[in-house]
Image (cartoon, rainbow, N blue to C red; front, side):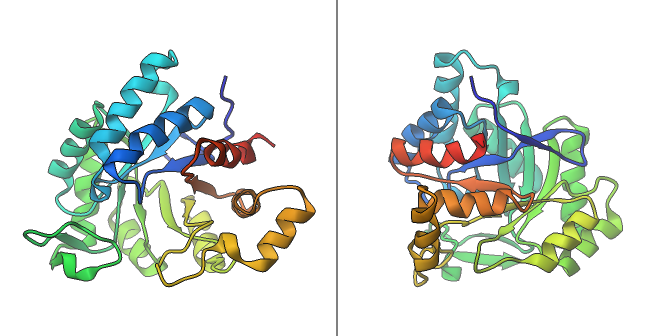
Length: 269
């Protein structure tokens, strides 16, 4: 039975301290990876409409609930919006086969939609067209989703302190989470301290990889490999543990079943 440490959010709900991220997986591969993640013990699955694989993630969740005798309440499912809040949330729920999300995030502090004939690529701004939509209006629309029971907690992703201040200035519901890039070479200490001072939980992504294709993955850094060898751990385990020990929620990945299990084991002490 999975026993994942959790962290209390300001919304009154608990979030598992380690999650399985679905960014970068093809539609062909993501289902098997998600099923494996749930089988080894992950209970927190991080999704986004812009990852273009939520239908496959939803099918994997459904199979796992049945095969492992789990209830929907045993899982913590996150998705993210990058365009029209209400319609995007409803579409994510449909694709995932769910009637509510545990956490819904504004994916970026900017509104945009895919260009006609293009597939969204986070690393390629030529695939999107930006729109004029205020953060404040977007946040009020997010709050409506909570009131209607479509989502339990709401938050943001890739926001800095000034952008968070704008949200907080109009918020009836405080952001529960700010999901940002954090790793050993991008500590983001001031932003994390700011979030914690406001009761906002920080969730770290790209702890192990590289946010840009031209960057060296953190897994390959010599000092990380040295620490891993000294403690008989993998490089990924070292990087994930570093983030967990800072009080962050961390997102993990893993292509092979062995890697997925190894990364999950970091949460087990």
